[in-house]
Image (tube, rainbow, N blue to C red):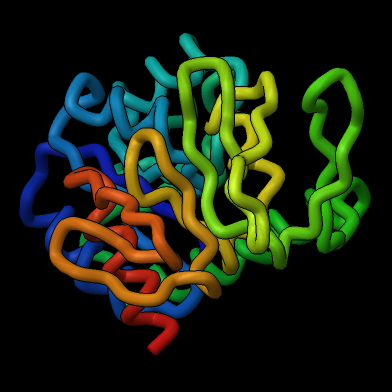
Length: 229
């Protein structure tokens, strides 16, 4: 699933885009915000794949950040923009836009991202972590959930009483996990969807463990469950 963040104060365009994206396969809306300041927390905590926003806000992101997801500008194309800005914008989405346009755009983005990663990404079912002065191989199927503690991450595994601890923050670890199997549900927690026993309004149960659901991640979790039910 590709995670999308929308940043715009144009409520009419945002509502239409939101409605179209909700029925588009392969994507999840990770957050909708009127300003860049409002989106700052989610941008830092959630590894998003696509950002839909206006030109001024995208220009700020391009200027301030070295690593960027796919950027889609909600507005008319501007040929006078500096090359440094233009080359970072994948597509321009001007009104009125249709579902066919959104569907085609998402397909093109998916193809682009697959081509981009095909030469560097190797599908694997395990990771190596540094813990207790040695490298430890962990099968992804054994991971119950991960808990972030500032610059550390605790990894809770099937059949293990105590978690493994590695000197790596949760956001960095998240990039190593397949997005179809793991999801961030709280600022401090990533869960394995296959290990979930039950989900209530504010928490998730995995075995004897109870994991809280953060307000900023509830919609993302609901969308993931809905699209896999």
